[in-house]
Image 1 (cartoon, rainbow over the protein chains, first blue to last red):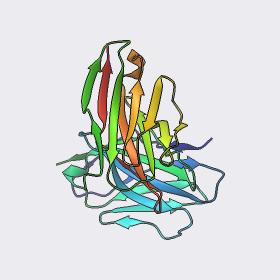
Image 2: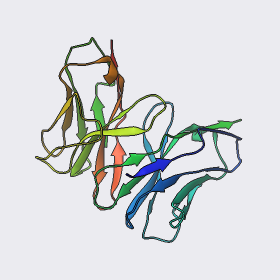
Image 3: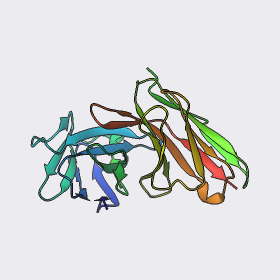
Image 4: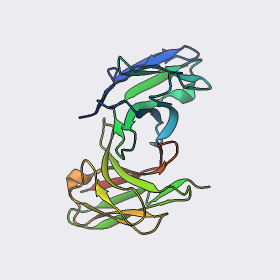
Amino acid sequence: AQTVTQSQPEMSVQEAETVTLSCTYDTSESNYYLFWYKQPPSRQMILVIRQEAYKQQNATENRFSVNFQKAAKSFSLKISDSQLGDTAMYFCAFMNQGAQKLVFGQGTRLTINP
Amino acid sequence: NAGVTQTPKFQVLKTGQSMTLQCAQDMNHNSMYWYRQDPGMGLRLIYYSASEGTTDKGEVPNGYNVSRLNKREFSLRLESAAPSQTSVYFCAGKEGRRETQYFGPGTRLLVL
């Protein structure tokens, strides 16, 4: 069965610091997609970044970047120059190519302190 | 574009009552999904519709039914609500080319 594990239930950093959120996953497939979603207190699920497993280059979206290690099945999210608005739950998610099911981790609650 | 919209935003039901959660998207997505999120957990798939006219069970389908009314709309029905169905419900549509799901704002449901 495919699983996603986020080993850090909570994290807290000061504004402007860099923070890295960890995610590991388990699959026997070679083609798949990985995602990070942000859920602020409003509960809206917002796509932060996505990575295609066949691409070796790590995805980047402004202050957000990933470290994708396919052999280790690891997909961490780095937030640079953190801002108060980054305070949220962050969910790592995984989907095999051609599948319908998006498998979520349990989330990491990130707090950015002023 | 409004993206993915859901109604209502919040609902209180008594045990045994029925209701339908509505979802609509204007992003021309072929696939649509219903998830539930319980406290402290990620989302779990209830039902999905890979294309207009088809629906399939997800991970936790018991107690729910769905209807893909047309390409834009995908509704979730609770026939006889139970307290265990107290949750936040999210609808999503998938952009096929990028295999990426985009979520609605959620419906918070409380069953007493």
